[in-house]
Length: 405
Image (cartoon, rainbow, N blue to C red; front, side, top):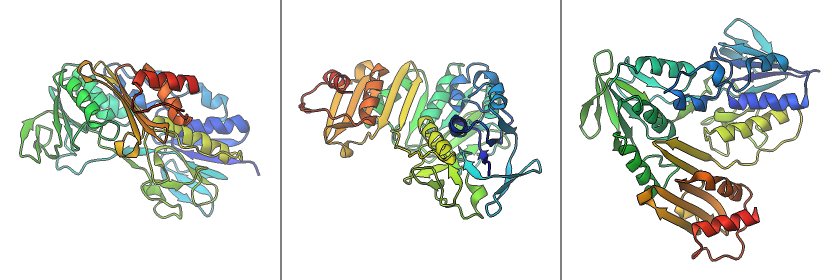
């Protein structure tokens, strides 16, 4: 029987999976379903593009004609109403029932909505879709003070874009430092210093307890009893995988859809990839990992045996005239050696985490041209050989890595 593949979702994991399928089978039916009215686009361009006019055609993952040229049936603005696993069919919001031989969930995650009184007021926004970006761009013009809830990558990128529009920005981060999962304390302090130098206020270890105003945003209150004014709020405090549609099905879910190294679920012929997939109890929500998931899922759906090899999480930030790179395990208690170059007065900081003579993680602030060599060392598990790791400099370590890769 000819394959009829249904892919739910139209982000990078979904499109990567479809491309992998077409490498193997040029003829089988592939149905790609997305809730948004747009063609699949690059979401990581959204926060960087708030300053400019974000146009759909300029951020597409593939040209619009690519789908028809490759025999992909693309459905835009379509929601999944229900899934009948026994009969292998998907009911959609336009009244159709799509039957499948294989089903891939790549419908990602949505931004988590923090349980703060007033979070539903007019003037509160989050950034996940192109529509969100257009809303923010339209409504920010006449605003003066913006509260950014969340000091992670997206919160910082949006803060940078909006501060360049001349807006007063306040960042509230619940945890003790900015980017706590990606940076150590010293690196985070460098980042905080640079962000503040642009006139941005940062409230570390601060919980927003209320967004004030009768109908629209007028201000906020904190757990420390502070009250302040603002006329717009943005939040970016993590994501929540879109697994609700699977509640009444036998597909195993936890935080996300639980998958094995082939991106298979516990139900035959059903796969998951990207931000919705939980592998080894982890959901990273990172672009490079979603691509890896998608490729493996696509190959296995087409019968090509492919195993997901753990892709080391990579985070980069280019904002506030600062370049930053974090990769792998960046916890000192997980390392046997640390190689450090600390020129924090000049906003240069390089820290390499080593375990059993192999690089397991790195933080680079300043010249991130070093990052590809470190990435290679981590991914290839390069043995550093007979080197005194207590005496070697950062520059010398880079040379050793380049010689051995």
